[in-house]
Image (cartoon, rainbow, N blue to C red; front, side):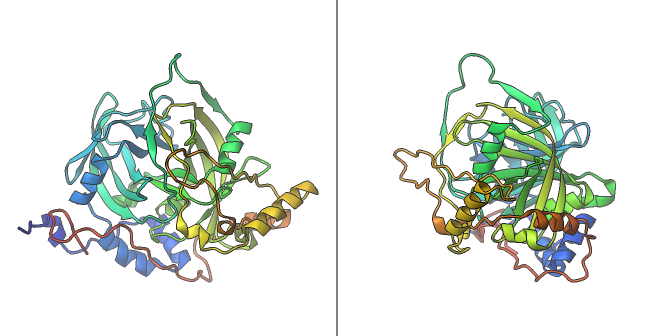
Length: 417
């Protein structure tokens, strides 16, 4: 028998909940009208049943929040499936799961803004939820949902987790410093995934106020470590909401989280972001619509804290479609480094063992084009990043993505718009 949908589904689509920073980014990209129309349909004030069931089956939850100084951090919570639950469409409960070294531990209060990302790497599914902490008991908390929406599977590298027992011999080492060390740089060089937390906590943002935590994926080398320790990474086409970049236009502080999927380490980075909207620097990364430059202020690393290890990645198909320039580009980098050229990126494409899973750890030569950024281009990129938020000539409008797997009509909670 067909079940009725929640009453919220009968209401007219709400006004798209975007603040001034998000709106400025949408205007600059030439997608403001599309984002307003799509955001009004795709962003809910409750969780549909499909999302509630999805979060309840996860052993990991990506969480974004801000510390006492307003610095955003992206962190992970871990537990047996069911440690995250949604007993009501507007309630998300998190039953602990704090990992050692979590920079947000001790910072949660009733009224704290929280951004949540449920992501299942092996199926490439992900859904977002933002809200306000309503109650706290130890490291468990209940969140009142203010925004719920899906994201498409683009740029997610497929990985299968395997639980591992806690390490014996006491607490794993932790480090808190101002700069990257060699091990950190090596992890960033081979990274194909990271998470980023940003925030707009201003009362002026109204209903769009909040913390966002997002997934970023790319070919190994898509996070470039420059000589001064600044990170540069591309911003690809997405759902056109511009949650992350919009927040950064309001408050440039960002919190990055890199996962060592083989060792279980977590690398946390606090940084100040600058957006490179256009210019020759974008040519260093195939598919880049913009660049995000991140000047590091703090680095924290927690060793072997994750209770999982992952299989070798099944790389997202989007990158293979960008052409066969990868081999030439990597050769160009190697030649430039050999003659003392101006390339500043670290390139390390590693192969990880995946015994018994039949998953390829190889990165196809045709799937990544990483070009050399010369010093002159870096200077021009720096100048481009000084540009105003409202451009004289917007870029070619981006095509909106379908934000999530279509939900099943006729099922309670499946609000199809």
